[in-house]
Every structure is written in structure tokens, then in C-alpha cells.
Length: 407
Image 1 (cartoon, one colour):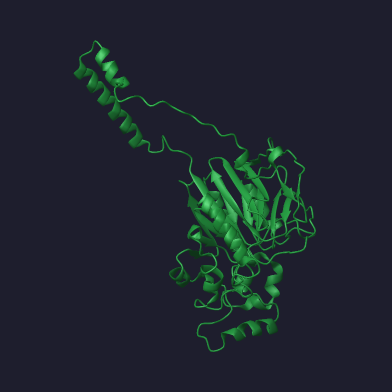
Image 2 (cartoon, helix red, strand yellow; image 1 turned 90 degrees about the horizontal axis):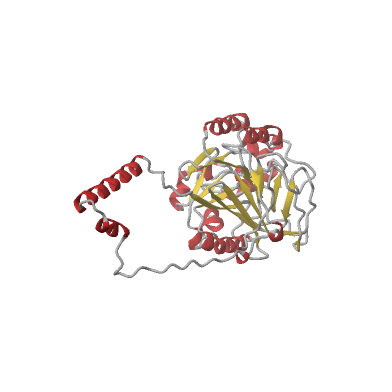
């Protein structure tokens, strides 16, 4: 089912390349189309007061029985029979009075720098927002540990970049992570790889590999951690399906880099197999919401071109199966892109730590709607037929931009 986006122009907000608020141009497409921020202060508040009956007032059932010409015993029996019938119907149809489920989560990528380079500042703002929205989980879209991933399951960076940084009570929820290129032990020349491996001198089971982040031993150290190459999560009585895909094997340049030969590395993976697994899962899904998570963007607006390694293969699949959103990182900023008449909304959240401090060029590579060049993250809520995502930058406590998508 195609998705639409809804906006309320008078409350829409954008920032320019200097981080200054500006009025965006709103383009309506696919029926009703707009963008809205999270600002509950403007919403009208309604107060409904109801007088409570005194203890002396009789219930409607009691009054009806007393004024009825039928014998009280017979009427009471009919009431009990009706109650039993309703109970039986509810038991046979447990979802008959089901309210729409809510799924709240945060989205952050490109973060693991021992708390430096704005990582701690982003974590602090995440904690503040999480206090308010109470996320069910957090999605990490890759490049979880810099510069070359974890060197072993005992690498102290797991604690210094993850456990000790995201230690606020409101962030003690599951973290579902995908791998980024740095998590593969990125190093482009043998000389660079030798420097990275030198950190392993004398340490057992220490080597450049993405396998360390996939090891269950990390979960035993911190119960929140969950990282796999390709997997699926179904939420809210199958109302929401999350599909995670390892996009690193799809990047052609990685295949000739020195780190491609790392244990469990690029050359030991297959992009075609990853795509096939994703398509199989998408084809079987009956969820109202289909959301895909990967590390690399398909479309982006901070470079002259879109990601031509993924665009020809991944985007047609996303559109074929009605995926409403693709969440990713890799680009060290926040972005939102959506093309007219496309079901897919691209959300880039790569501002978890070091980002583009100076304003960057904003390229319109098709469907470019928003770009924020500072550190930050995204908060999303799926509720019924609505998906709302609020983009947060560390320059302020309220969203710098927001979108609302309808299934």
C-alpha cells in the first residue's frame, strides 16, 4: 500500500545550512502531503468534566428491573445470560476491542568514539527525549565502533563507547544494530591494516573482523546489545515488521579494499544472497508497516550523486513490496528524502558523533526535503496508520524537522 505524508504548513520548520530556522516550501503530492514537527504546545487542550453520581443513585439495570412487570428472577437471569454471551464473544475474538498498538523507537548511527566528538552530547539529548517518549527500543544503523570496529569480544571500547555512554535509565532498552563499514575493520591499505592490528599485540583472539559485534558474549556483557547481519523483527501483533540488511557487500569499492579480506569480511559475504533473503521476508510479510534498516543510504543529498551501488537493486525491491521507510546512516548528518509517487521515505540518521561541522552542500538528487549538518538522532512513533519521525540536533531540545507518514 502506498504511503502518503501529511503536513501542517503553519507549524512546519526547517533549518538552512547555517542551522538557522527557515520556512520550507511545501509541495503537496500523493493526495494530502505535508510535514509537521513535534510541538504539542500549540495543540488545543480540552477539558471534559463529568459529574459523578452519588452513592444513592441506583444503576440503570437495577431501575429497569424494579420498574419491569417481569419477575425479578427472570430479568436477572436474562442479564446474566447476556453478560455470558458477551464474555464468550470476547473470548472467541480477543482482538474485538483491541486498541491500536504503539511502537516508539530512537534511531542513531555512526557513533562509537569513546564519548568524544559530540557522542556524549547526542547521548544526553537522546536520554532527555527518551524520558519523554519512553522508546521500546533503539535502532543503531551501523558504524558502531570507530575506527576499525571491535578487535575482540573483550575490546574495552564496547564499554567505553556503548555501555558507559548510553547509561541513562531511559536508554536501558534493547539496541538492535546493523553493521557499518567501520565495523568490518575498515582499512584501505595493508599499511593501515597493520597499524590497526598492532593494537592486538599480545592479546588473544584479537583481530580485525565484524564477527566480534555478532558474538553473543557482548549480550552477556550488556543485555541491550543485539547485532546481526540480516534479520527480521515483528512487533505489535504483526502490525509492524522491521527488516535489517547488511548493505556492506553491496558497495563495489569495498571489494578491492584491504579490509575486504578480514575474517568474516566483505569477500565472505554475498550481496545477492542478502537481497534474496530480504525479498523473501518482504514477500511473506502481511504487516501494515514494513520498515527496512541498513547502514548505507540509497538516496542522499550531501553528495553529487545517489548511491548507485544500491539504488538499482535495493530501491525497486522496496517499492515493489510497499516498504514505507528505509532507515540508514553512513552520511554524518541527518537527512530526509522522498520522491513523489514513491512509497519509500528515506531517513538518514548518521549524526551520532563526529559530523560535518561546517555547512555542507545540499544536492537535490531527487526527492531531497531536508538536511541537518550537525550531530543528532531521530525519534519515531508508529501508531495505527501513522508513522511520525522527529529529527533532533544537539543545538536545541526541540526537533529541527519532522515528518508524518500515513500507510
